[in-house]
Structures are given as structure tokens and as C-alpha cells.
Image (cartoon, one colour):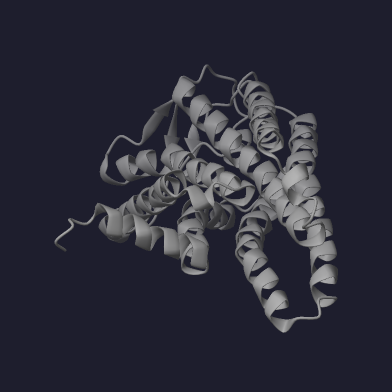
Length: 311
């Protein structure tokens, strides 16, 4: 164990181990960030403008798009700055804030995806009761629960970690202040912190994931009992987009957070974190727009409205 010291800043190594690719990384991640913000913003505008999309399904999709914009804005701008800057430091307060907001938006998204699965379950398995069960007030309450859970998880993790003493090293082998790399710099025994992280991850990742699996088990059973092939195809198409997002998001999150610190591999975890924090958010507008006839139709109507009458 190194000497305990007062740390007032950290050094984010990012991708400095590949100096010849820094410009390529900057252009690539900047393009991804612009596409993510632009794509999700278009979804927000379309859903707000088109009254036909003012349904529970698109209410949750609007929340998801907003989360994706916030989620990527927490990490990518600082990563882009560090790629070009010689000084790759981040203050202790800024590191704590970055971790807090990243966990806030990530945990909120975990819960929100589960509620989206519940919405699809009610729509397919109880279509006659759908307008009663998924009324506007219920949707707002479910979204509020997602944000409250995200806030509690983020506050708990950030408070526990940044009240611990750090050793003489302040170098974080990551591109943002992720839990595991920061926890590696803590002095002493972090066993209870690992238990707390795994317990919170099991609550906010595994429980929603199990609810999603249970919902889709019921959904698939109902779809297979449908007599019409066209009805089965329509039901599958409404769920497939959500399933793709869930698989990508939860797959990497479960691997990253639900395991002990001794099994961490920072280089591998860095690549996986890059996948679920940078790559997955850009897939949201692509999946929900290119695979959704209603969204494409609303986009077409919105563009036609904005075009001059002569055109």
C-alpha cells in the first residue's frame, strides 16, 4: 500500500498509449458524438411535433433519447479535450461530478428500459386494458421512479468512493472517472465498497434485466398464440427494436459492474466502457427510426411541413 496523500486532481490516460492514432480517435469520437446528439434530438422533435406519437411507448422513447444525449455529454467532450490537450488532468470535484452524472443517467436508463418492456407487455398481452393501465399519469410516475432510482444510486456510489483516502498515485487508466479505475487508487481494504457496488448493480441492473426477461417471456408466448401471421409480425417488429437496445446495454453493463475488483482488466474494461457509453447511444436513433414505420412516417411529415410550399 502506498502513502496516503491528499489528492486534488487525477490524470486521465484515455488512449494515450496509442499516440499515432490520436487525430483519428478525435475525428471518430467527435463524429459519433455529433451523430448521437443530432439523431436523438431529431427523435425528440418528431415525437413532440407529431400528435400521433403522443402515446406511452413514445413517451418512454422521448425520455430515452434525452438520457442518451445527457449520457454521452458527460464523457465524450472531456475525452475529446484530453485527446488534443497535453494536460490530461481533471480536478477531484470534476471527477466526482462526472462519476455522479454518468451513474445517474446510466442507472436511470436501466430502469427506463425495464418500464419500456412493461409497456410492450401490457400492449401485447392486455391490449384492451392498455389505455387504462398505461395512462399518462402512470407513465409520468414510472419515469419519475427511474430518475429517483438513478439519483439514489449515483449519490450512494459517489459519496462512498470520494470519502475514501487515495494513495500516492492519481493516474486513472481510463477515458473518464469510472468506478473501478478510481477504486483501484483507493488505499486500504475496499472489500465493503466492492460489496456495495455489486449490491447496487444487482439492484439497478439485474432486477430490471430480470423484469425485462420475464416481460418478454410473456410477450413471446402471447405472440406465438396469435392466429394471424401479420399480427405476429407486427408484434415482433414493435418489440425487436427494444430488445436490441436492451441486449447491447445490459450485456456490457452486467460484465463491467457485477464482478469483484480482483478480476478487473482495465484495458478490456476500457474498451467495453467505450462500447456502452459511446457506441450504444448512437444506435438508439438508428434502431428506433430505421426499424419503425411510425417514426419514419412522422419524420417524413415533419420534413414536408418545414419545406417551402413551392418545393
